[in-house]
Amino acid sequence: MILRVVIDVVQAYVVLLFVRILLSWFPISPWSPWAKVVAALARVTDPVLTPIRRLLPPLRVGSAAIDLSPILLFFALEVILSVLQSR
Image (cartoon, rainbow, N blue to C red; front, side):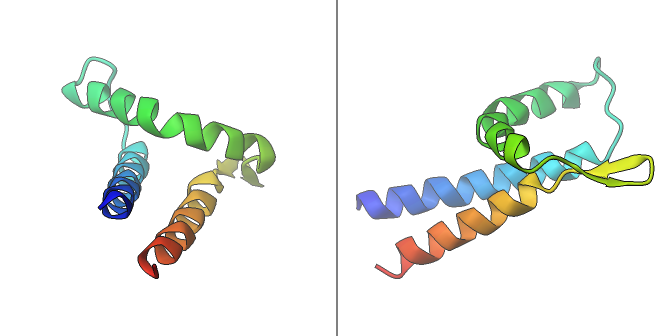
């Protein structure tokens, strides 16, 4: 029972992380209703992403930078989910 709840919470977190990444690709005005959604997603995902960003700085590609921390977090969460679901 508790294991099922943990699995569901981790899966929900993966979805929230994915939505945040998708929304980061679009310019959102600070006065838009979407700005509140993005801010809420950031409050949920940043506590986990920030330590990863300290360990893995953005990859510089010319004048742009690619944040690899969500990819690493996705990988780690999928490993955790596969271990939990195998029990």
